[in-house]
Length: 262
Length: 134
Ligand SMILES: Cc1cc2nc3c(=O)[nH]c(=O)nc-3n(C[C@H](O)[C@H](O)[C@H](O)COP(=O)(O)OP(=O)(O)OC[C@H]3O[C@@H](n4cnc5c(N)ncnc54)[C@H](O)[C@@H]3O)c2cc1C
Image 1 (cartoon, chains in turn blue, brown):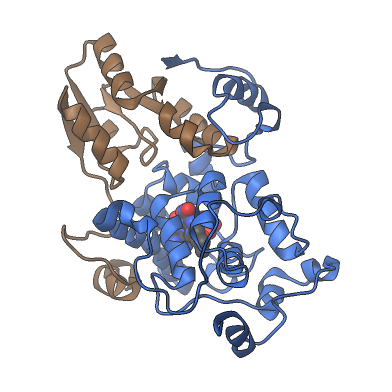
Image 2 (cartoon, rainbow over the protein chains, first blue to last red):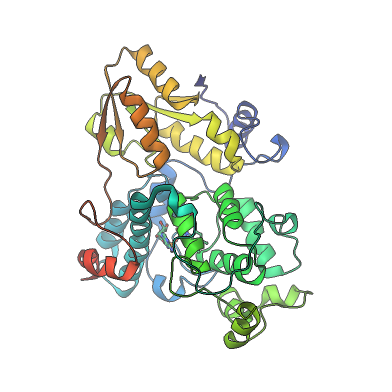
């Protein structure tokens, strides 16, 4: 059937679209709200024009660093990968920052090539894990994790950003995936599905393969983080508010011993 | 007619650029959405992209909806930009049984020959990323 073009402001259009699509999305219609990030080529071009690559290389790992937030436009082909790369070259030339940025764009094409070769096999372990990941994984993440109510402020805040905006910073994605897989021993598939449902840039290849990269089923070693890493890249605010006993407060050798010598 | 899908959802889509006079159509895949239960934010983002990019947005079973859109226009052929998704490949195989379909290559950031076995990023980028590494 043909879908009508809805008129009105963004919120009104959102409400009408939510009515027509009822049953076809995860939230209840009352909770169906547009993301703060707008779709469309016009919004994508504006975001691209605003993005300056200066400082990208040294700050991209910081939660408040200078990342582009172009992933949802790139994911859906609203902006071309080459188009984005060339825009940076034309405006800023070749620099340390630009080269790092191009490399990250390169990751996207790389994951896509793996997907082209393997198809739906990316949804199964591609290699044996390099450490003990546990077993009997759930189909879905526990409710308190999805709702951002674990009590671990750093994880909860990252999840809240995801479910409220549809975006999560790359480093937060890595922390959260590592938390799910290695600290909670929940496997990578339930987390992969959770991300796919919520990320505006949710992409079979980049998502499933990144989860496998953290797990070590598509990399040489598992990705781990600790409290120091969170504070260095996310700031100290989360920890200051946190009442929980911190599972991340340890050195890497200690974590490896605790998490992997089962 | 040009079919725009979720991997290539703008009027700068390669198939759309090849046939600038043709109508562009996007289809929300009802069965897939019912199972996937994506967040509304995601769906609405796609709607906004589509609203700008196409003449017609449809909801239903993809092959049927595209056939119907073609029939209504009296179009003879469908052009679409290539995707690597297995689901896309299935749909195109199904469409080809019924109508003439032209698949237009998608552009990447770097040119990689068919059959290249991507396994780890570093060797891939060393080999193909030279234009960007300098
Ligand atoms: C567990 C996990 C799941 C992920 N799932 C997705 C996903 O579903 N879709 C997705 O597009 N990215 C995914 N990523 C990769 C990365 O986190 C996002 O692409 C990035 O955070 C998007 O933000 P940005 O546009 O501000 O990035 P920037 O740092 O500004 O990067 C520019 C562009 O390069 C590409 N890019 C950057 N880093 C990566 C990467 N590691 N892998 C692939 N492409 C990259 C993106 O297209 C991005 O828009 C995932 C990473 C992890 C660790």
